Amino acid sequence: MKMKQSPAAFFANQPQLSRAQGESLARMISLIMPDAAVFTVDPQKKISYWSPGAEKLLGYPSQALQGESCLTANRCIQCMRGCGLTEAGKVEAFPLQLQRSDGQLQGVIKYAMAFQAADGSFEGGLEILLPQRPAAETSPAADDMAEKYGLISHAPDMYKVFDMVRRVAGTDIPVLIRGDSGTGKELVARAIHGESARNHAPFVAINCATLNAGILESELFGHVKGAFTGAVRDHQGLFGRAEGGTLFLDEIAELPYELQAKLLRVLETGEYLPVGADRPLQANVRIVAATHKALREEVKAGRFRQDLLYRLRVIPIFIPSLQARKQDIPLIVRHLLKQQFSSETMPEISPAAMQKLLDYDWPGNVRELRNVMHYALVMCDGKQVQVSDLPPELLSTTTTAIEIAPGKPGRKTLSEADIVQAMAASQGNLAQAARRLGVGRTTLWRYRKLWQEKG
Image (cartoon, rainbow, N blue to C red; front, top):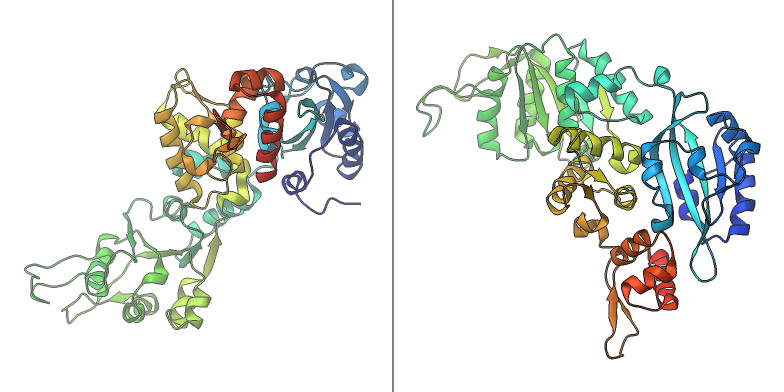
């Protein structure tokens, strides 16, 4: 029997679990996933089940942990500050470095789901820890790519990208980088240039979508004095400025059709003709192109030349979206923080806020994550980023205020951020959280349940 979906999808599809259901499910999962650490905790967060896989992964025997605090076996800085399960009800794809019983560090990806009593109170939880590959088995290029080019990832699909960068950097073969907007296509292009023998020469980039056909031809190939009205002197184009180096053509699908033939000529002959010139110039340039569009579909639509597609797409590199590698979010966030703060002044990210970052779909990818962190750092108190410090778009699907007792005088509105913060401050105690919010416990339970169903 195999689990046919990821733990994230599995948890997302589960209804709210009672403790009895969760305890039974934990034992089933431990059979399906023998290499994972599977355990459950009671309402006091004391371990009630510890799987054989957990014994193997972290080295702590089940007999020694029964009835002990979950922190006995979950030893890390984040664990001591709180895992966010009580407040958020679930944890998805959260990377941790835990200390094994022998003192060695073990990287894991954590998934968890809270058990809920009939009155909505916290009744314990189920946790799954998936082992990350040891450092010796991870991509040798990962840390180097992060340090040199800002490409942050521990995702297997990105390891393939790093490996491709190293392989193609030693050649002059054209490369086509494909990925959604904001995934870091230019960073990959810079990495190819930086790892190549051309790294001493310029890296020149242009976005083909930003200029019209007339200007773009002059920008690419240059022009001679008198070539057109206003050409009062010779102008060196991007091919000339990138001499000996790399020319990065971003959004290549937007290159005007009439210019595609001229670019094809450069790729076929190694020569280009400045506007108004009568003699071609030799191009000693490596071409790297990028697009978020499927060029084959553009060819079918008559907007892109098929012969140019074949010339550019000799080596394709596909960059996965941030949604497909959410385990990288904490790594990228930490990298962004390290760029702005020293270790002494670096603010923390609360577990609930981190869970919001992990839950979001990130249509704008890493670029959007960077903008979100800039916003959050402006809004936070400088010590910790809370859910309330995140921009509205991250909360828009779950934080629209719900009216309590609609139609009654003095009615109150709550957002999910209100509920999350109150539950966190009350350590999961529903009655205390209700008092903080000024509503009845039953009312809070009912609308907390509504939020969970909407999320």
